[in-house]
Image (cartoon, rainbow, N blue to C red; front, top):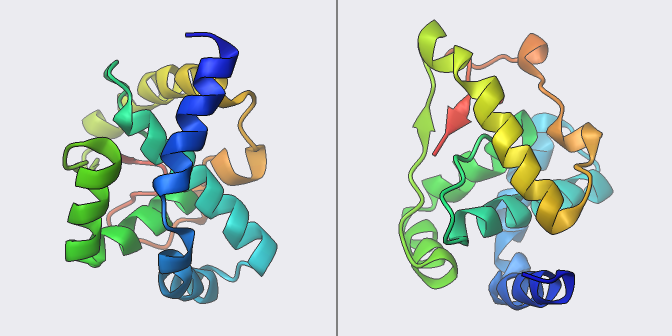
Length: 150
């Protein structure tokens, strides 16, 4: 697919993504995480790209960053909206499978590298401030910082 086709494909996808409907969800995550408005919008933009990768015909194993995962968690909690968004945007339900065991978490770095390669084909370099692994700062009991996968 040419760069023009890639950009028009993503433009069409992102135009269907109702960012306004994410305002309450984004406010909740921003308060919890201490994000300013600019950073929250950046993470939402990265979540849209993450969701776009799920819509591609090639199977890309999704491995979110901590911050992208926070938005994904809140999106999932709005179950009806999440189901409709998945059907409308991706054409299928995008499952979330946290990686709890050490064995599962050890598989994540190579899966993340594959997803990163797909991301960079479509969008260029990942913003490091969003996509860095924040496992050292994780406060979740499930150790899911950058450790959840589709």
